[in-house]
Length: 143
Image (cartoon, rainbow, N blue to C red; front, side, top):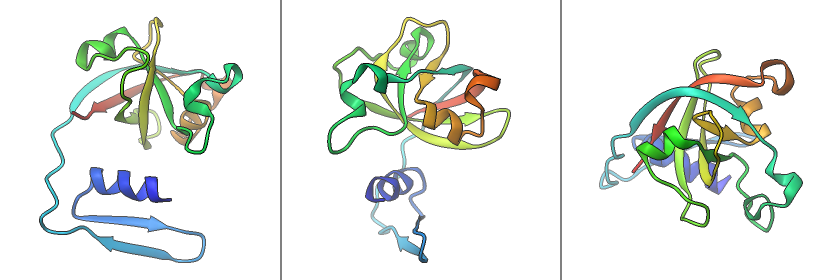
């Protein structure tokens, strides 16, 4: 929950909302909060991959990345990433469903897609793993 709230505050510096099963809580962000940096927008195709099957470092431990992603060659032209580098966040919006998530680039791929994401991230965007398989997306890359 803390990670969700922190990410929400980075995206929307005015007001961040944390929702729990019991009751919603609204947390105000201080006025001196630095502005959210401008994002670079990229459009392309996304697919999914399950890195938990090969015990990738980012899927295990006390704080695994739930919405992990691997940057394809086109996304790496916008912001370079190599395996072992510090992960960075992106916002992915499905053009089919309009749903958005914040994902973390933690890996690179040699795929022909813009990005490969975790199965749970693919589902969170309102897409079906085997029926849809791929999806058109808008990705916002944050500095």
